[in-house]
Each structure stands twice: as C-alpha cells, then as structure tokens.
Length: 107
Image 1 (cartoon, rainbow, N blue to C red):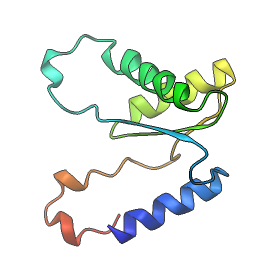
Image 2: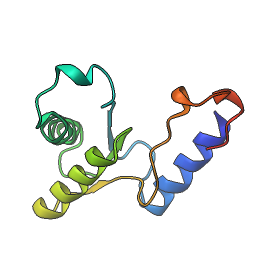
Image 3: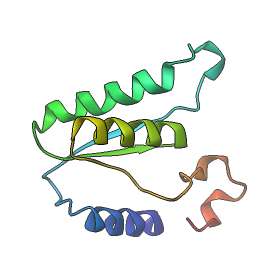
C-alpha cells in the first residue's frame, strides 16, 4: 500500500539505509504457535538476521517482524554484538491482515 511504503521510506531514511545497500530479514512469528518450543522466537529471530547478514557482510540489516518480542530480541542482539541492525522503533508492528476492513485501515 502507498501508506505503508511511505512509512518504510521514512524509517529507512531515518536509519540512513540506502536502497540496494542493505539486507532485509522479515520474520513472521504469529503462525502455528502451538507447535513451537519456548525459545523459538529468540532462536529464529537471531538466525534470520545472521542469515541476512551473509547477503551483505559487514553491511546493515533491516529487520521487520510482527512480534515486539522478536524486534526486542534483535535489538538486544545487535547491541551486544555491535552489529548494524535496524528496526522500526517505538511502535507496535502493523497487523493489517488481522484488522477489520484492512484495505481501508491507515497504518
């Protein structure tokens, strides 16, 4: 959607990310939750940014998720390991697919 694209452009600009010069990891957490082990979110979030970082070694990674826990995990991992990983901060992830009249919903 144009509204989401605008938000994404603004966030990428704030993070000083240049199109074509960063990797992206998008982690959808809220599917088949009953089958997961307790450390699933932590392990898969860290794995996703490690995998994305192989696409652009030493370069920045933009991490997106539908889970605040995943976002927090990756922020802490990036800080602890001095990694160039950025996320949208201070905002609940968008859940347009779960909203009533999602096509009319503003982000």
